[in-house]
Structure formats: structure tokens, C-alpha cells
Image (cartoon, rainbow, N blue to C red):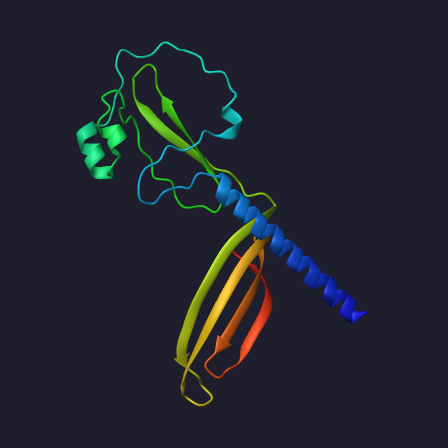
Amino acid sequence: MKSKIIMGVVIFVLSLATMSALYAWYSASHNPPVSQIEYIKVPEIKETIKIKKVEVPGPERIITIEKEVVVEKLKLPDWVKTDANKQVIATAEIAPYEGKTNAAAILDTKTGASEIIAKQVPLSLFGLENKKEIGVHVGYSTDEWEMRSTVFGRWSFARIGNVHLGIYGEANSRGEGIGQLEINYRF
């Protein structure tokens, strides 16, 4: 009976890990990457794509950020720098977040000033993730006061609320190794 339960848990975890790996592969191959090297055009928020675009009366003038300075300071791409029709009307720095952050540029048609507003989309209760970590621990043991090292690897593949499910493995300088199912709560 006990071995059937263990086998069921192992099959469930392996199935969940396989689904997570397939989901991560599919997402990576179908979503445009966010570049850390250069600015890219980002996709619109899905819910707003099909909303009809309408014309509204605009201000006599629009307040922009001095283009030459902002292009230099933010290292904006050439397609912004060289196109006289493209102006920077607002900037924003959005804090890192595990989920998505929706942003919208708002134009005050009376004053001509613009601002960007943003809202972090709450994470769903359940999520497939693909977070990998590998590393080394080095230090002294207290039992024999000798130098020891441990090589470890971790793969988190599922999340339920703030509880993350994954696999952890390590091998140390004494020749010992261990593989474990990992469940942790992140604050």
C-alpha cells in the first residue's frame, strides 16, 4: 500500500514537471523576448486589442521630453532617434514582478501632458513555472573543521499561491549525494 502511494506521488510530480517543461518551451517559442540589451516594441494588453480606436480632439500642443537628451540618457534605439515624427511623451520605471504588469500612456487633452500608469496583474492561484538554479556552497564543517563543498541544483516547476513545488539535488565533497522533492513557501 505504501509503495503504491509513493509511486502515485512520483508519477504525479513527474507529470507536473513534464507539463511545466512543455509549457515553458511553448511560452518561450511563442512570446517575444523582452530584451535587456535594447528597447523593443511591446505587445498591447490582450483585452484592449479588439477595442475600437476613436479620434478625440487634441490639445494645440503636446508636451514632450527633450528628444536629444532623453535619447542619449536612455540610449533609445535609432528608429526613435532618427524619426522626427516619434517623440518621447512620458517614461516609467516598472519594478520587477513575477507576473505581468499592465501599463497605459495617458494624454491630458487639455494640457498636452502625458503620464504612464501601471498595475501589476495578480498571479493566478495555480501556475506552471520554469525556474532553474545551480550553485556551489563552500565552507567549513563543525564536526572535523575541514573545508567542504556542495554542488546543488534546483528546478521549481509549479506554484499554488505562494507554495512552490520542485526538485532539489546536491552532491558534496565527501562523495554523498541526495535528490529530493522540494516544497517551499515564498514571502
